[in-house]
Length: 185
Image (cartoon, rainbow, N blue to C red; front, side, top):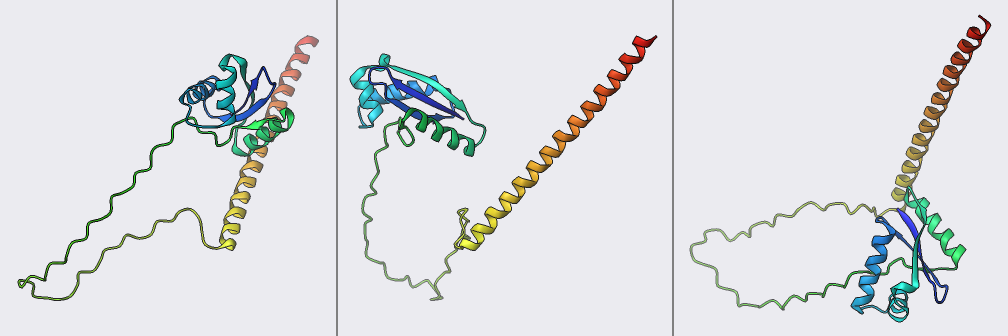
């Protein structure tokens, strides 16, 4: 994930955004969207007014997770007093399809071939979880469990790094001890 800046060389205004693609790909998307003239986003208006050649797109930083991305984005916004590109759409919105009104038909009388008058039961699908609970306590417990798991992974990672460093020191010590005995001969 990349934090990037687009600088208007005429006004020195800086736009700050994020992308999973390359900065050049994202810049091309913004240029194409500005040509469509369907949005009034500030960047698109400036591209139309000043031309794409009046802008410089550059990479600000690379993030490895969402928290890092958020921190780097805020840092770039503060550093450049930038205009956020978060939420600026580069594709034309799809038209909303409105369903035609349903036709109402008169109910047919029950056929005489039916022997039972009991209605057939409706089959309902079980509700699939949307990923959210309706309880703040459950949400808090889930977040705490996730944080605890993350801390355990981080400590295991640090322990592994410490063990590797210790092993490397031992190897280097053995190599040094071999070298010193050869010099004495």
